[in-house]
Length: 129
Image (cartoon, rainbow, N blue to C red; front, top):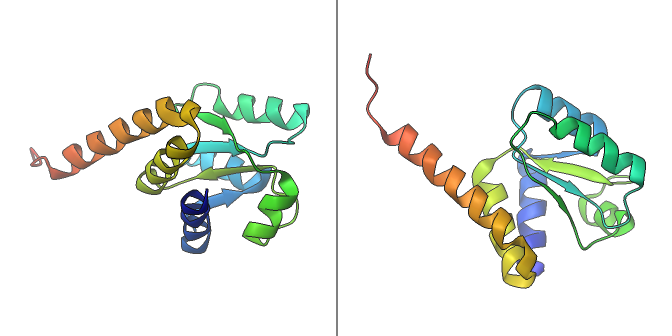
């Protein structure tokens, strides 16, 4: 868990972690959201709003093993019930570190790893114009 928490704080310091419903909404509106995360004690209405944000989008939704209070303390924000990674490599590393600890994250880690590899291939491909 320590490694996953380090990736989360690194993303927060780098500005690659949108925290809160407003920040996540802005990340989805701009098309930059890569992984949407909810606290373990997030309310049902927060979960529904998160699912509405995901409608028609490709970002996976996962529930974290930490409560809102623990995440708030870790990130230095008030009431962190929802957050999303806006950087694909960091989201992929975070998901893979979570899959090492919790087996049910392996499908998300694999999905993000495939997307990251595709992005690297597309960036390395020569341009046709």
